[in-house]
Amino acid sequence: MSLFEETLPGGAPWSMIIPRHRLVRLTALDASANLTALLFNARQPLDRLNVPDTLKALHTAKLTRGHILMSDMGHALASIVDDTLGWHDPLGGHITAAHVRAKYGEHSYQDFRNDWYRNAHDNFLVELQKHGLGLRDLIASVNFFSKVTADDDGVLAFVEDHAPAGAAITLRTEMDVLFVLSNTPHPLAPVGEYPRARVQLTIDAAAPPADDDFCRNFRPECARTLALTDRLYL
Image (cartoon, rainbow, N blue to C red):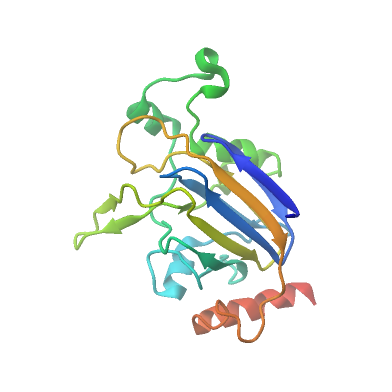
C-alpha cells in the first residue's frame, strides 16, 4: 500500500509539500492527459523550478528519465527516475481563463457548478495562496504527458494522441518540495471537447540516490546539483 494515493479528475487543482526522498508516481488513467506542474523548495519558496536552466544543463527540450528538475539556485528539486512515455513538455506553458473561453466556450461555475471549465492559471493562484504565495510566484511550468515539437523556425506544434491511458512518470523528490498541479488542458491542444482525463497520484518512500544512480550520472550537471542540494540537509 502506498503512503498516499489520490485521483485528480479533469480540471482539478492540487498541491502538497512532499518530503525529501519520496517517489511521486503520476499515471494517466485516461488517454491524452495533461498535468501542468510548478515545483518549489518547500523550505525556501524563493528557490523554485527554473525551466530554462534545467533544459540548458541537460542539453534538451523535453523531459524524461534521467532528467533532474533544477531550481534557480542550482538545487535538485526532483529527479525523473522512471518514464513510460519518453517525452514531457517543458515549453508550452499553462492555459489561462481567456484561452479556455476561446477554445472551449463559456462554461461558468454559476451555470455548471463543479463541471465548470477550469484553467491552470487560476488553479495555480488558488493553490499558491494556501502556501502563502501568489501571482508574483507564478513561474514557467512543465506539462506532464504532453509533447510539443519545434520546427526550424521555432514554431511549436502540439502532438496529438501522445499519451495513452496507463502512461506513467515517477519523480523522486531530492528536497522537501511543494508540488502545485493543475489537471487542465495544454495551451496548444486542438480545439474540441474540454478534456477530462484523470491522473492518479501515488507517493511512496525512496532511498537517496546512490553513487551509481541513473539520474546522478546522466550528466555532470546532475551530480553537481545533487551535491549542492545535500548541503541543505547537513
